[in-house]
Amino acid sequence: MLSRIAESLYWIGRYVERAEDTARILDVHLHRMLQDPWTDEEQACRSLLAVMGLPIGEQESASLPGVVERLGLDLTSTSSVLGALAAARENARGARETVSAEMWECLNTTWLGLAGSRRRIEEGGVHQFFTWVRERCSVLAGLADATMSRDEGWLFLVLGRSVERVDMTARLLSTHTRAGGSIPNWLTLLRSCGAWETYLRTYRGSLSDRHAAEFLLLDRLFPRSILAALVTAESCLAELEPGGGTTRTGRVGVGTDAQRILGRARTDLAYRAPDDLLADLGPVLSGLERTCSQVNDAVSARYFRQTAAVHWQAGAVA
Image 1 (spheres, rainbow, N blue to C red):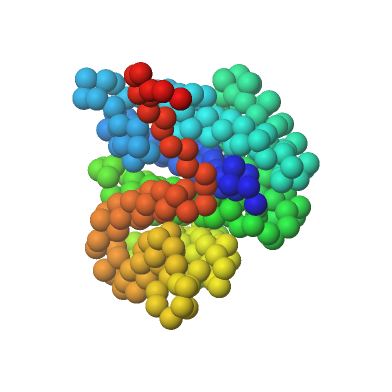
Image 2 (cartoon, rainbow, N blue to C red):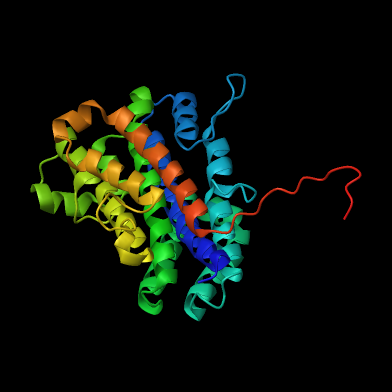
């Protein structure tokens, strides 16, 4: 597979997952702040922007409309819902020969629908808009599952989606540790991940910090848990490498930096006791965010074309 096609599919997976998860996070936080009249809006908005990697200065004010604008409607930033969806569509446009016609039509239709986002919010509210975003992302995921061959292209798409899911779930959980008195409770966090009903069946209605943290970080069967996403990403990397990603002799370690980084993070997470995990939740989540950044760099260096900078020299002779 051409490296540019592999890179486009990888980033389609990341951008679509980012758009969906950002919509989930915004929807949950806005709903929480509207429900709780004692919430410090300024502090909550600052905390949310910081968790999402868009902190603002002390002299700047933070408000709900400003958060919706920066994280929801800013087409110039791939950190926003609209920006991520537009970037996913642009990558799909460059990989038309690989994605199915149904996937392209879904992304293109979604992109065309972004023009009416502000009107959609004004008429139906932010909840309706974010619900629409989540539905469009789910349709695309379903079409990818139903129409793509399980070849290298599929593996890069799922790899990107899994890496982004680890990062965004870690950011969502970080709101629990960084937002002070305005943090959403575990029930709200579970609902934002679409995990509430599954959690109730798993723990038979018992809601506790320990069980909720254990479910969202360590559950192997729930696809949005961090451990499940790490395992999926590792599996994709192993299938992309000859010999399952082992070293040349097949006797020592693994063959790629990305596998090594993911494996270390997965092992560290899987073998932590749930009580210890809850006690060290902040550092664990920060470490997972760094892991995703390191994995992204390692995957890019391994599989995608790297263009060296051109240095011009005055007076150079051809």
